[in-house]
Amino acid sequence: MNYQQTLDWMFNQLPMYQLQGASAYKKDLTNTLLLAEHLGNPERKIKTIHVAGTNGKGSTSSMIAAILQEAGYKVGLYTSPHLKDFRERIKINGSEIAADFVVDFITDNKSFFEENQLSFFEMTVGLALDYFVKETVDVAVIEVGMGGRLDSTNIITPLVSVITNIGFDHTQFLGNTMEAIAFEKAGIIKPNIPVVIGEYTTETKAVFSAKAKECKAEIYFASDLITKDYPSALLGDYQIHNKKTVVQTIEVLKSHFTISEDNIKDGFLNVVKNTGLLGRWQQIHSHPKVICDTAHNSHGLKIVLQQIQKEEFEDLHFVLGVVNDKDLEDILPLFPKNAKYYFCKPNILRGLDTFLLQQKALEYGLKGEVYHSVSDAYQTALKKSTKNDFIYIGGSTFVVAEIV
Image 1 (cartoon, one colour):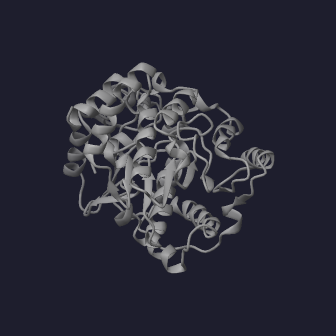
Image 2: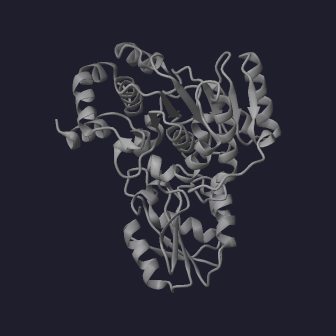
């Protein structure tokens, strides 16, 4: 198989949450442990940093990686989902995994995958760990896919565990209270391994503290400990919380790595250059100003929508699409009524029908037309806007993926 055929096989033959949603979710680590053993337990051969949380996992992971790169280390970075190409998920010092490595890994292990009915995500975690070991990275930053306790990444024993925050997302899998979701995320806290918490509430702090105590893990609440701010290439208002989480994590990592103040400053400034991170309050056009952002739940969207209100503009335009398991009652009330909406559907199986989105949005006073594609919606928004307007593209990672 060539690279494209390999990807087609991975995407089509096996459950993949990115495309299918609920049917792809497995509440079990048995397969991942089986795969790890099959691969010679690569998770035991490298130093890792484990990052969980409802929002900010990707940004936080990328900033940690960028700082470690500035300090001169060879840094693996595993994130999900990808925007354009599968290989974005697995990088070393910002360079994507070679297509040939992906092809060879799948070819060499295909019969094992089929025999044990491994999911897309389980295979990909195995691929990342195997690649990082074979490329002899100094350290790998591993982002949780969803939840934590039962996530395929949770076979690692990291130098530090990081939990960015807790919000309502994927409630059909993780629970519908803050405590229940915090319990799932707290599943990455390991015995005697320090843990850094970004944002917390009274309810979630109790869950994290109890788990840390049970594990005899030192716990650091970054929002209480870090006051210094750093300029960053990531310009979203929500990054203020992520940066505190990163600074505290770096403090913990200083017992393992040599990291200077300049490394920290440069890591924040060079995070996009060092890691290739996209879609975080990313400006893609001027006059009118166009911003795209991957925020897709109420916790993330609240901050983004507040930031939009700080902008100066004449008219406001939203190119909006979502996936079909999104709680619209939770997010649509956050959007302003005095804006023009361009409803679209991301080009994946999980994309929500545009007419359904339009109908539901109308219940909240959000008015707009339906478009055949994300690109069509965006191009129309550009045509209908003036140079002093503001266009926002989002609602789903997969909407942004079609534009950046």
